[in-house]
Length: 103
Image (tube, rainbow, N blue to C red; front, side, top):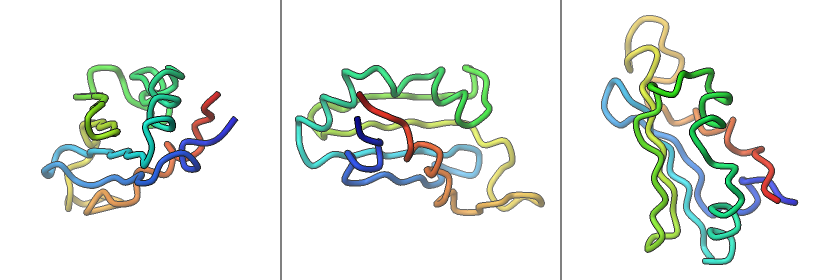
């Protein structure tokens, strides 16, 4: 068993405009990518649980086989730069994904 952090080559978050956050997960081997994809652990209910969201707040969760990558886009609860925003660039929001255990 390994964490997503251990299997992914790139695990990052960033703004996708002022109202959305996007998460990119890329792998350097097809084996690691397929292991994560086939585990079923990266799914909308997991994202909702990790980020305290409802399913309608998850805009996209897409597996890109050709790029060995996964893209997840969620709606921000506070727009970027608004009073109370904790991360203007959205660059530190990927941390909850890191410890997902993959069988």
